[in-house]
Length: 273
Ligand SMILES: [Fe+2]
Image (cartoon, rainbow, N blue to C red; front, side):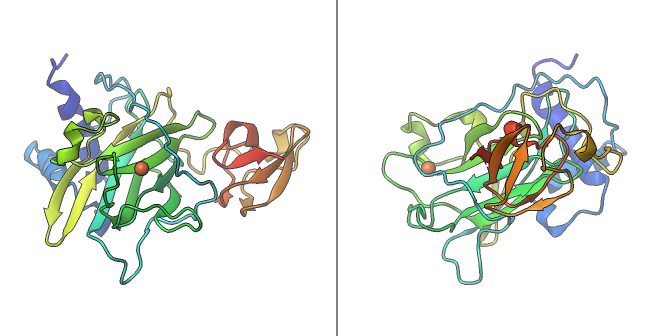
C-alpha cells in the first residue's frame, strides 16, 4: 500500500526499470529523470508480477473525422525540411497488471504545422509496433492548431487480439486546453524543451489482462488456424487478400502477422471483403 501518491511513483519505478535494463538509445533520452530515480535508489527495481498501482486504463476519445486506414509503417513522420518544431514522443504500453506489452499496434495521425490534415495522402500518418519491452518512439513535429480544438495527437492502440483503443494526447500549458470540450487532463503528455525541439513521454495502459511481451517462445499457430490461408509469420502488404474461417479479408496496413492478429480480431489490420 503506497497511498494516493503511488500512482506516479509506481509507474516511474516501472519505467525506470525498463529503461535501465538496456543501453539507452538516443530516442529514449526523454526520460532521464526516471533513469536517475532508479540510480539514486541504488539499483534497478524488479518488476513485480502482482503490481497493482491503481492505474486506470487510458481513457478513450473520439476518433474525429480525419482517421485513414492504411497508414505507412514508420516511426518517423518527418523528413529533412519538414516545417515545424521537432517532437519526439516516447513511452510504453502496459496491461492492467503493469506488465509491458510487446507487439502492440500504435497508429498515429495528426495535423501539420498549419493545422491541416492530409486527407489525400499520408503525411503525418504512420503506424508502428511496440518492441519486446513495450516501448515505442514517434518522431514528428508539434501539430498545428485548427479551429475548435486544442493541440493534440491522435492515436489508435491495439494489443494483439484485443479491442482498439482510440484516443488523443495533449500538451501541457496550451491555452486552449481550458476551452476545448474534448480535452482530458489524464491524456496530457509530459513535455520538455530540448534546444529547439520538444521531447514528450506518455505511457498507455490498456484494458487487457495482458501477457508478457511475445517472444520467440510463442509457438507458431499457423497450423492450428481453422481452414484459412492467413498464417503467422507472413508479411502482408496493403491490399493483400486472405481467407480465414471461411471469410475473405483485405489487409489495411502492411505488417508481419503475429499470433493473435487473426483478421476478425484486428480491425486495424484487416477488414472483411
Ligand atoms: Fe484532430
